[in-house]
Length: 382
Ligand SMILES: *Cc1c(COP(=O)(O)O)cnc(C)c1O
Image (tube, rainbow, N blue to C red; front, side, top):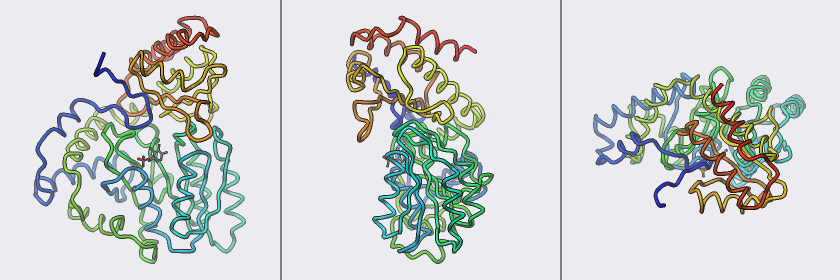
């Protein structure tokens, strides 16, 4: 059967019909009063989502573009940055920093484990000359399904004085990311993750402290110069042509989120994470991340005795459910279930039931039929 594809990957994520319909309208002029109105409304919505009084700027870019902008606008060549790396995305920010000639120190953890905040404290305490200008942390490490302890790390960074730059691409819209309360200086994200939108928009939130650093930062920038975006945003405008129709979608998606409420959104992601993890346990499929470090956006599973790629292939072919695979050295070792954005409890039950049938088809009989569904239902019905 065609047209039943269900995305259970951590981006792009499913898009609700009201958002799709909003985007089906004709684009309007981006210098019009009508568009300024939309800019004003989405800016207010974005501040609500980030729990901030500071600026949230919108770029036509993927999440990587937002992160790159959020790093290069506040730093100068030769500056020291400390990058937390326990997966594909943490690694990527170290590479971006290197590409711009920054001096990169890393704090690493094995893939599947969380970064240890105490290592940040030790490293920052040792930096008595305050040569570390910024610390970069990926809140939810999508490649492994690990949620790093951003709150504790940012506390240490704040006492040191460096800028706290955060990849919140798969935590924003799934977990609380209270920018002002936690003292985050830059929070980057992308539309195709927790926002219930197609790919194409990058979001960069900037603190007053980061704008201070911007004044003396000399890394080259033009399209990604956030000063231009701020100047325009202060007039409810854009420095360059924005993806007008995506803004229509953003307006509707943010209003849907506000109607659901932040607490309810966070609770829904937590419930679906818990249900998914309970189901995997009941199916005797080992979880890749520990409970204490589990991301509410994505569950990584390391199925001993069955090829993860075979599971993905049957899930796709027979049940039209797209799961994510392992990246780099984890290819074939893990599969990842996305439960981010516009995902309902029914989607979790469907995915778990289809997974049971898939395992059966692949000859894996290490579980009691129905055990996964039953475990998930127990969590969802509680
Ligand atoms: C998806 C993602 C990104 C951004 O990836 P793009 O493909 O550039 O949008 C960055 N960080 C994390 C943790 C992600 O999941």
